[in-house]
Image (cartoon, rainbow, N blue to C red):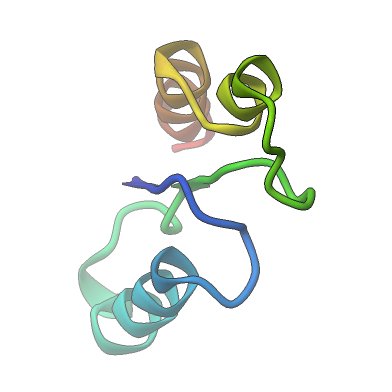
Length: 70
């Protein structure tokens, strides 16, 4: 599971997921999961900024979904 605050496309997490999927595919038991910030322009307002970032519930749900699929 890769978690980052950046955008889902073109970020460090996307490149890392692609690299792991390409280089370590034979050793993976499940696809590489990613939890990222919202795919929206980064807001300036503090409350909107907090909504745009991933938080613990999103990470827990993504991990549990990965185990359900295996």
